[in-house]
Length: 321
Image 1 (cartoon, rainbow, N blue to C red):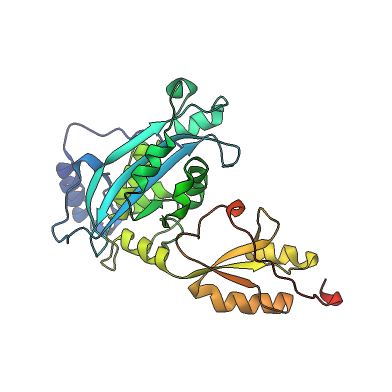
Image 2: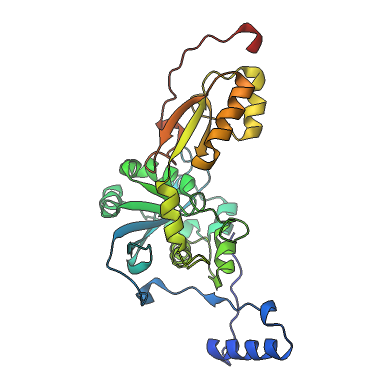
């Protein structure tokens, strides 16, 4: 939800605040009990890292705001995109501006949505997206990236079908945040743990700025968050389709993380580290292997209604039905 703006003192600058905080901490032997957080760097003032290499890949960093969670019913009301260039070590070497736009939905924006996004009916009156222009702009990138790709991709794909053919990176799902020493997976909470904050949240442009700053953060292992996200996105994964799952075992599968697809088949996204254990669990439960479909970073976060389950006809013993 949109947070309250932090009131920053104008009597002393940031450097003086850091020095005073450090001196106070040192005087009390509490250096490890104080952490200073800084406001995110505006994208218009992005600086090339000193050790940056030549541009290697262009990524479209995307954030959207919508009238709700259902892409087949709710509508996008704001889209923001920043094109970033990364080098071969996944350091953000340039930001090619920020583009954003709004659209008036067919139905009035619910008060709860306005409270979350800060977007009112008055702000979007008469405004429209141009899907062809959005598609042409995103086509300049090698991949799309969003913090919660399942949400942003599925909504955007309803408006711009062309994005369904592009690779997608999810900064939330493709990064093992806990292994990197972070706690939780909310974007602004992760940003704060990286020593940064943005006083404005849940407007698409501000969320994109926060995300770019988070992607550029260098973790304890010396690699950027962007490097971990790209590695996770390119790693193998599979969709386990429980195409022969007896009805009496559906609750077991649900507790394991399987979800019913648009076409009625329970399924689960499985990463490489989970593959063997998941096969063993399914064999123990059902008595045979699931249908295993490889999914790459183009397929991974697409909506359920855009893919069809494998048509697998098997004879199920009567005692397993």
